[in-house]
Amino acid sequence: MVDVTLKVNGEKCKVVVAPYETLCGVLRNKLGFTEVKKGCGEGECGACTVLVEGKPVCSCLMLAVQANGREITTVRGLSTDGELHPLQRKFIVYGAVQCGYCTPGMLLVAKALLDSNPRPSEEEVRAAISGNICRCTGYQQIVEAIIAAAAEMNK
Amino acid sequence: MSNTKNFFRPSEYFKPTSVAEAVKLLHQYGEKGAAIAGGTDVLAIKDPRIEVLIDITGLGLNYIKSDSQGLRIGATTTLADIEASPILHEGPYNVLAQTAAQMGTPQIRNMGTIGGNLCNASPSADTAPVLLALDAKLKLVSTLRSREVPLDEFFAGPFLTFKGHDELLTEIVLPPLSPRTGTGYQRLTKITTIDEALVGVAALVVMDDKGEVIKDARIALNSVAPTPMRARQAEEILRGKKVEDGLIEEVAGVVESETSPRSRPDYRRRMSAVLAERTIREAIARATSDWSSGR
Image (cartoon, rainbow over all chains, first blue to last red; front, side, top):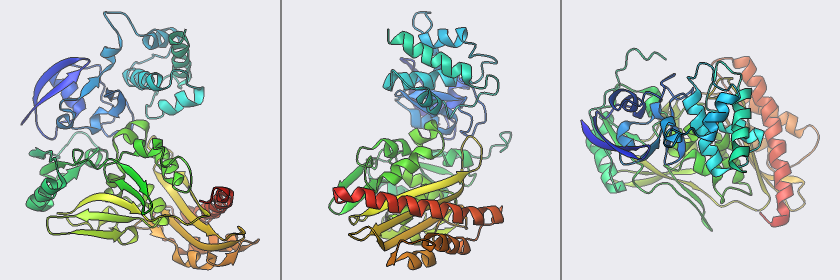
């Protein structure tokens, strides 16, 4: 067993993990960050997406030990002091959330996109979410919400 | 893939800080040990035989360097870094960036490495035919020695390479390119999230001063044989030939005859010809368009 420290949404979390435990499993089951969803468990659906130093990764394909000392953002980290991020507000308004299972991953890849590209084209938005499957919405509302959030954030 | 039974239970994890330390660990643990970088294949496959994980991301092997000797890419360079690299932005090496951009998903590209793609040795690995067309050599290091292996002598079978259990892939070396070199990679995919290649063809051509004769050619494919492969007979036909009607179609047919796909063979064979034609034309067009810059 290995002692690791994960900085999750700015907060240091110390946890003991086995070498084979995934970041997804540890975040959900040992640290209580159940907003990180486990979908396929093999990196194909993107539901488990978190940001590691601002970059989207599939937490089911990362070992918790490999995340030691690194900055991790879950969707909980998008809101500040209870105020929803513009992306979250737009997702609600645009009907981009149905069952909600893909939503944490979608929001995080959108956040990462807007951090590096504040005025993405629709094509760039679709490319950014291409690693996240949604079974409910057909993606249109998600794309529109992200573009709307970008517009608001650029005012 | 079932998630209900998981026998992947390595008991130890090391993160060496030098190549010397890493190869010592690989030597010590042999078949029980496995290198892990981005983990996108290791954790997708979850091989129960792995007892010891050796994290190789702390060895400073994430780089792309270009000089008069050619291009050197560190083995743990991520696909995302290859996609975004300013060094690969233009010229014939751009095919590598374009290929990386198509692989997996953005999340997988942020973690997955070029070395991992090669060492996993899937017959459908996309970087493989591109690197074969570019005449890549691999630097393999162990406690006993360091050696350079041409990529076309690296793959042994599906998910099998000639890399020893005690060897670490540290670098991919690409020789410098002649002026008027053009490259291309085209693929068809299995329609899933991951979009694994169904058939892929990479081509490299070197044109003469007038842009009419093909001085040299490389054609490589993935997903149509037990390993990524070169279509050597087709290459031989192209060499020294003037680009004329019928030549490329003929060569595409030869490429098809050199493939040996296991599953969906009829479709894959036919598509290898279709893609070979497209890719060769793309490479020729790029060779003749880049020549004004002398590259």
